[in-house]
Length: 478
Image 1 (tube, helix red, strand yellow):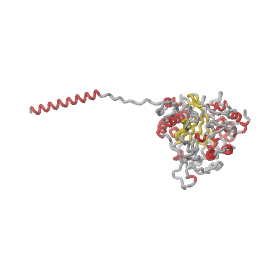
Image 2: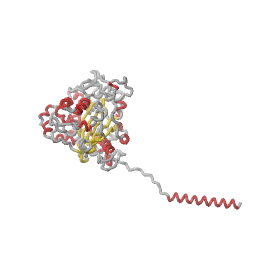
Image 3: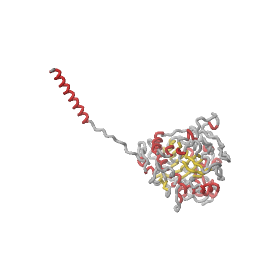
Image 4: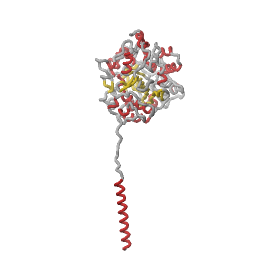
């Protein structure tokens, strides 16, 4: 009994000692406190000059309304920084506009108003390169600005039939007359006749062809330019041939600050929404569409609902002498809108990747509005450079149509050694441009050919400068 009792006492003592040791260990261990990372704003990511990767925003706030003026120092992590710059530009340009200034309204939010983007108030090239004086910026000093003002700035160029529809439909914000991207290169016929460069001729010929969607409708294109570029054009009278002749060194302004972001051109591709299209997955507008030079509205329904399917942003940002080129596309382009996974018969033109099914002179619709051309089977040459970044911004834009857009890539200047990446284009804007090891599937490679005519001087990557040739009054306009 005594042994048992002693053993029992010893056991209790040992257990007590162990408990004391455990307690001591527990109290001497550092207390773990749960922490959360501070949110990253667009202001923290914009115009980033650090050596590491650019911060990626984790929230949408009023600082996202500021258009960035530089992708920052690209000596390291260049592509990532350039792609963040592109997404910040996309968000700011699609930010709700202040119609009095045609600038992003920091008091509003893209998350609650996705219908009035800033870039859609920028004047179209048709309103700047006119037969007379360019339209005033943002409606002028006595008129209100906004998307409608941008539309009416080009009113004189619309046919009586189009103006009649406009008068009956105040909800219309777009008049889309261009059925091929050749308008981006201004006068295809003149340039083809004037150019001795085979590569440029190949680009011009391929971009003259209409892109036909899976519903048999032509894609339309529009071009806008920002106030920095507009002011330079007006100050130097580049909308006239004499003005071009008097400007031997065309040099658009480069970004330098948040109030002087640099010359910017925005080139949009639109499709007519129809059977099988989900309008909630597109940024949409009401538009009048027509195809011919006489301005006759297309047969069938007009106006129509169009959805944005491609957006090029060309920006002469700080540190980017050959401009920064951002390409965005709607996510359904290569799976639904312009692609049929069950296309038949195999090997036919309409089932062969990126093969034109209509010519520059093809009619789009019959007099009753029936599509006349087979769809083009669009297969992208390039995949997005940064899918993870796309997912991040798409998540931030959830609940808006802009969550259904993706950045394909950003082409940026690396200095003396050239540009990165070597290739960049959009499947719905450069569909028929050749893709090979020597190009020309490249924004900079193409726009490097841009010249003013008749002077022949380089026009700083912009084909728009040749627009005065399209309207004969420019030849003598002072």
